[in-house]
Image 1 (cartoon, rainbow, N blue to C red):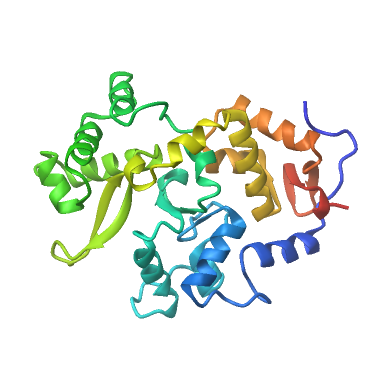
Image 2 (image 1 turned 60 degrees about the vertical axis):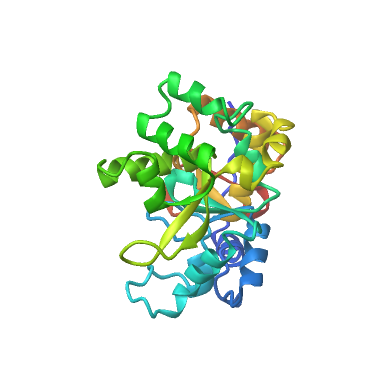
Length: 290
């Protein structure tokens, strides 16, 4: 067990101040340029593009537009984030794809290898997907999408769907294939094409071609070290959370998450603490307790 007998209490005022800084909320200045967005992502290690309901994690939207729901109106000033994101897809300044809970995630290039180390990619991009397919971890549709990109290079979603012989497939089937391949670091969006009825279509490429150094960088990182790094970055961002909060975000097996938590507790990065306003077992940065 990694829980302490004498349990400190979370200092809610310190926690609020901490989150104001890490989520870039007042009194911090709102992000106002692509350069400030990059600095924000690099400082946090990984953030969501949009805030996700039920998940506490910094997001680019909140850092730019404030702590409010994503606006429906296209002319809302907060939607400047969309242009920043699209404009950076081919710049290789961060890693962007549907990763955490299959939602749009922005990851600093220094942290991306730790995520990749936990993916189902072990050797050659020509072979890993076949092993995943044979093991039942990849659907037939995802296999067709990946093979098409592998053999033909980057394609926008319309051309990709046709080339992968999925033109007659349900939208949900094709979109799920894209999500699964992104979540496992096999493909990612690398640009935007003026294609389709809306003249807007993501261009996809296989990860090792867009970030050729990433597999080798990840190979040096063990899975335990990767989880410890990502979990520490998570707590540095949110300040305090329950074990179930972390499990919901990362989707790790219970015993693997417990091991990672135990390591951070041993290093005194986090401690078990009481939340004065909520029940349950909480974990918090040591510096945010009293």
